[in-house]
Length: 369
Image (cartoon, rainbow, N blue to C red):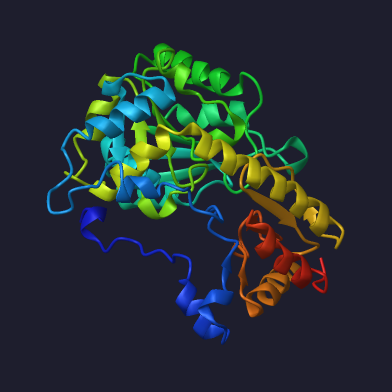
């Protein structure tokens, strides 16, 4: 029997704020999400809904999302025919899996990384192969020879750049080097080579992108989102960006009008105002430095971070679990890792506002590291 006729695997998502408030007997307002990598403050785009442009909510959004596509193409420096708006980056990942994977396919990713790559792979009845990253001392860098070897029999390669949950990006020409490996191996075998999906959810924090490589490696798809630097996680707007030919199979799987009229209007306004994201990135950078300094003073061991979260290592997996529980009891929600995860002795903390971080510092003062 086909594996796709079997029940799909189920996955546990993060508990809701209301659930945590009830469990720990706290007011809902006392819960601070240090686990979901969102921004502490929303962008000021009130005029989009109250003045300059009021979305017509009784009608569906335009099927071509022309204004949104135009704004994204200008922001990313690509052609309008290379941009596909999606309901958040996760829809773009799902559509990519649908386009490039089938039952029996193989997808490769460097681990640890974002868990959704495995999820959308398995939902297609495909096999997920994780290639371990280099050590923490080597900044969790890609093992390029191992990735190239694994990709020789793969249909799709997932890359996260900068990487979640480690918070770092590849240095210099390393992504280009990896793509060159894929192209050379494919040419030697007389095949097209794997599709490569690079998730750039945090690209604005490092000010660089692999988008320019899409001509060098035509099967490259780049995922962008407005959830992180633009602080529009609740609007759920993302993009798949690729050459028109590569984007075509991804586009074929998108449901009509998956991005709401309100979300499209907010996203268009945000993309036309780069200063909104720039100000948010500056605020986050300031608080990121403050979190590293303050929590290091309590013995928490941070890894370097370029993004809006920090990975902290503890003396053991048990110590990390105890620290997480202590934070939860006072309404601060860290990102934890399963006991069999390579980062089981770590907690990942989103960079929040100064006031929220003051609560974190006070709580951390008495938590063993």
